[in-house]
Image (tube, rainbow, N blue to C red):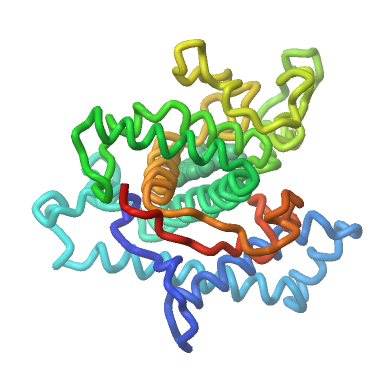
Amino acid sequence: MVAFGHDPRCLVDGEEEGDARSEFMDAFGEAQDLVVGRFLDPIEVSWKIKKWLNVGTERRLKKAIADVHAFAMDIVRARRRPSATPSCVEHHMDDVLSRFVASEDEAHSDEVLRDIVLSFLIAGRETTASALAWFFWLLSSRPHVAARIADEVSAVRKSTGTRRGEAFGFDALREMHYLHAALTESMRLYPPAPIDSQSCAADDTLPDGTFVGAGWSVTYSAYAMGRLASIWGEDCMEYRPERWLDDGGVFRPESPFRFTVFHAGPRMCLGKEMAYVQMKSIVANVLEEFVVDVVKDDVAAGGVPEHVLSITLRMKGGLPVKIRRKPEA
Ligand code: HEM
């Protein structure tokens, strides 16, 4: 909603035929999996041949991309309609897409706006969902962490004079240092974007002296880096939110070149702060009101859920949970 004033209805149970949500979600998921499949194919040229012949997985990918593009284009065209203009502010359309549409510095074609919509959808949709699934799974075998978060949330309620059930403001969320640390520690071990690749624009040399030529790909694994004893110490495999807190319990950030979950440098994640706001609001509101029980026995007992090798670190089949309301305090 904040990005382009449109609810993609990701949480709606879209079983009905022709449901815009389910068609988009299916196409989006399929496109993502098929693109990753290209990298996993042992015969590199095989997807290129299939693409040239327009058969098999490449034919399906083409259709999925067309569906995803159509969904994003509908959002753009709806915003271009005279009723949605001329002034976004007048219409209270203060989202990112409206700002691009209204931009007087630069006119953007529908295709450029479509790609802006898509980049926000791709970057922001599964990343936070993946982070929260792994986080709630980690919490399921660590009730003391869940209890400490709930205590922090109730202390922030007192200090901000707000009541249970009310939305948290930015200042209140900023005060939740332990929750910030708990989420960060979870993403260190289970980074939503586990592998990232960049293409080198011009010949360059990495800080350790490694030469990288123009057009070469450089890939790093945030997943592996998050588990390196040389960066995090001998307890690198332990989930320990305290490693992110100073003696006064204040969150202590790490260099993005060590904690690479949001990437580092000029192309770092643009939505990092927004992602924390979303995740902290969700966790704070859920743990304030509910107890979350993981229902799969092996997983609830601490067994690691199966990973799906994709662009984001997905959990196979998601994380089935049961929600119980806490008694009124
Ligand atoms: C926990 C959640 C998130 C994680 C772990 C994450 C991680 C990342 C990473 C690793 C990149 C670099 C990708 C690359 O260059 O190959 C990136 C880029 C980006 N992210 Fe996020 N992201 C998250 C949430 C979000 C959200 C909620 C938004 C906004 C709705 C967002 C918007 C973007 C954008 C626009 C870029 C491209 C930046 C650029 O290329 O200049 N992200 N993110």
